[in-house]
Image 1 (tube, rainbow, N blue to C red):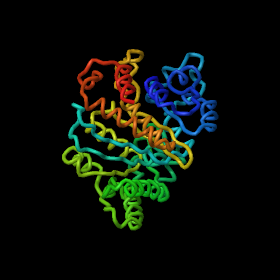
Image 2: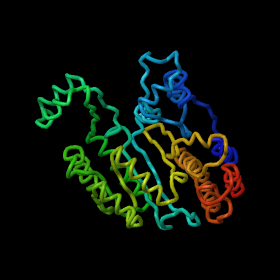
Image 3: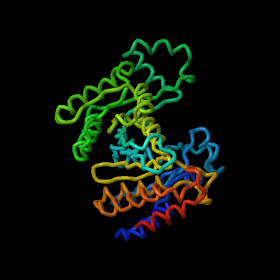
Image 4: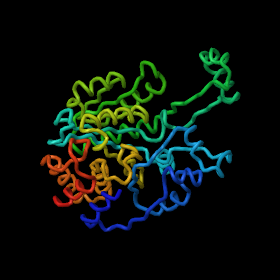
Length: 354
């Protein structure tokens, strides 16, 4: 975040910056990683730039609560997932572009944009453990395969749902096709697993076919998630735009990020109808905190996406050009790229180009 602010100050973006409390320390000390005051503040803003934070599984999170908050009924939820649902940030946009000169590129001709549905699917948050009797009874009454699980006992059963709606499927596929139309892309590939996940995957594929009829000049390709992961490694240059539900989109975007240098270059935007949250996708690295060791490019490219969304297209283009030039010169690099420069030194090199 510090690197991003230095770049924004150099670009002289005419904006008011307001800090919002979010992350692990607020979970530990308050029992809420996304305090209500932060949500209320964000509702007064145009958009948010989100720094990397730590998130942990349920059991670990409970153990790290301050002693005075233990056994008070606090339950940990991922702040970014809550933000996506709170602000209906339905479209997760993740460009994965290879910049020449990056020694970590799989190929220099990879330029994939992933559209991930952001509010439903496997990350919708409708889960149970143990499974309530009423939930089991309702499912058992409506599906013959539920009965075989009863012998294990409801206390030994966990249930995650994959709820998808036609409206959300249509929206994310439409966003992908509109992007293709705007930027001259020739194909959109919808990725799911309809041969196994027949109802939810089937809904996604059927909906995509309907949407595709409105874009006769753009090809619709359909692939299964497992095969698509293989083909991304084999022939990543064949794919321009991928679109998928929440979990599959998450998996695809991390794989695609590795093709263009890893998560140190992975930027993303969570976009709704009137609000957006921009975040690097790499998560946190507490062991490096304060060392200025990690690659700032993901954060700087995320900042570029924010500028473009705000309509500051010239600033966005200048920033991307500066990033590309620093990478191409092969002089200033963080440790992941085989160099020894700090985050701030890389940022200073980008600022010099600006």
